Amino acid sequence: MRFFGVACLAMLPLQWFVIVGSPVGGSIRLHQVAVLVLAIGVFLTYGMKQAADVVSRFRLFLITNGYMYIIWAAVTVYSGMIPIDPVQEMIYMIIFLAVSTYFFFAAVSPDVRFVETVRWTAPATLTVLLLGLTLGSIQNRVDIFAVISASIAAVDPQIIEFQLFRRVFGGFGLESAEVRTNFRHEIFGGLLFSMYVTGWAHARVPFTAGLQSMIYRLTMVIGALMLLLSLSRSIILAASMWPLLLIVRALVTGRVSQRNQLTGIVVLIGVVVAGVAGVWQLLWERFFEETGSYETRAGNVGLAFQTIKENFWFGSPDLTGETSAHNFVLDAWSSAGVFVGVPALIIFLTIIGLWASMLLRIQTMPEELLPITAALALPSIRLVTQGGGLLAIVEWVTLGFVAGVLAAAHRAEQQVSAVETA
Image (tube, rainbow, N blue to C red; front, top):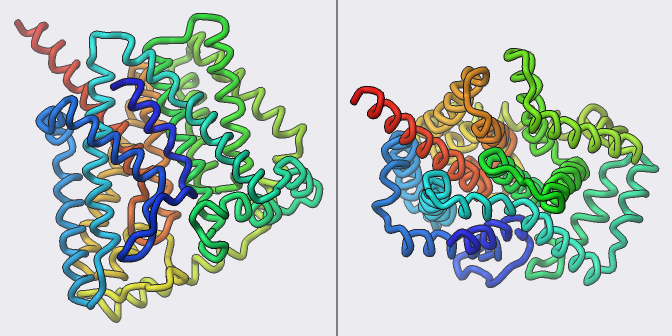
């Protein structure tokens, strides 16, 4: 099961490969099938009852999500439309339970080989992503390095967005008009997720062999550079929380472990390489000079509040996606009304509250929980930057990873307490 899980999770970035068009709209893509197959495998191997620890710890989150998407589906049907998005989210919620069960067993398993295998999630995912991008560049005749060089030389992020990503992602089941540059957010979010997983597994069972350790560090450096070149502001912000947490922990504790020193060296190497390559100028342009998207989103936020005011009870669906506020709560409320908006707010506060509680424990938490705390930055930031009032599959899988590890940590604490009181 451990190798099977790594193989399925490594498919997460391949979001531009369509397997079949959906008869009710949209498409079924490779990464969706991969995690669904993983879910089936987990439940067949461990059984649904083995998710009990996760369900117990995250009952409010699960009940609120279930209620929200049932109501959303009802409102959608009432409006005369097919409830594709709510049904998809309910399937993703099942995948969340499966992923959390997988990592729960990885964390509690007495067989150290489980975690040793999970350590290879990031190298496997990076390899798969590079192969996918290479295949796309060959089929669409895109010189990746030439495009990146041209973008850096011109200090123009849009060259990468439109001449690299939009072209490379085409031809695998999506028509050119369907290919969106914002695919990169979830594609590179999948890579970032894999780096969290490997970071956690490495903290539990460090790579010791010289070659294995070198592969780990090289994976993290290349992965970090690819995240920067994704030009996804939300993914870069989420990724930057990880080294920031390490710095804060070192400052508040007054000590730096050897493993964190090595992590710092890896990050420093990535920073230097990015600086020499001219990537920082590109990122400055992306974050601080290209303000058009900020202004558009600010206008859409105002429009969302206006829509909520005028359609408080049942909302007004945004059929085009062009007026999305890129805010989980506002998009859910404006699209389906107060009975969906309030649960969305509860879900948002639950995730943010969990992240805040982890941040407050940063001084005393075990080192293996640092990547878990860092991982919560991904869904937290994406909730206020992605549109549709939906959790994308990468966020569901990341939350499943976090939930599984935290449920295992809670069980371990209970067992220690039971021994101490016995």
